[in-house]
Image (cartoon, rainbow, N blue to C red; front, top):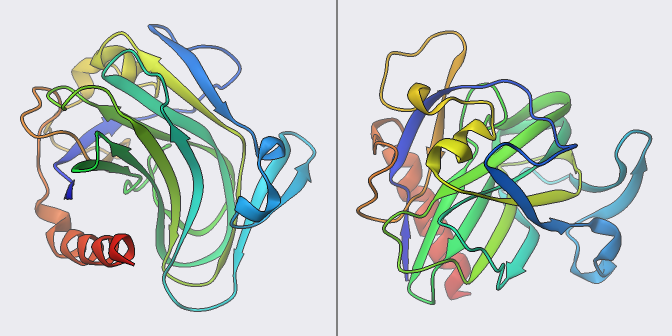
Length: 236
């Protein structure tokens, strides 16, 4: 099984509006907590005054833990450019956690997107935050076909309480529309000097892509540890 993290991009981000389809994209799926069996959830479904049913994941032990949030089997995507979006709120998260999306292209090809930025909808899950948007995009240019499954996880290094809204699966006509769905013009994506409004975002993409640039210098040690952990989890 191959698992790869190939790129870090600098992007300027704003808020995400979930009420309508983004320009150049459309909603093709939704993950609703009320439709899931309680035994399959890593937490409990609670009511939020603004967002309705949300999932509450609470961890009380200071050990690394991965909570599987969603598993879209045969997602039915028709393009190589897609994203999962939603809202997240958290309190007292120790260390640096993140949301991730594993993209499966058959049994031997798995690639991931992780929210490893410092601000915006691709920032990490750390400390305390009110409700905010998150965005997990993927550019599958060069991948062996379209994804056969998508898995969304919450990874926490220790204690913390996290709430996640229902999630939407979006597909886009091209890579520009995919980034624009997060409020990022295509021209702003690429290896450029960071400003106060720019964030690093770790995005796993298929080998040989012609989209965003691979720059994993800042995460090599962390990536190696994470890959070992993921392999151990898969083997178990």
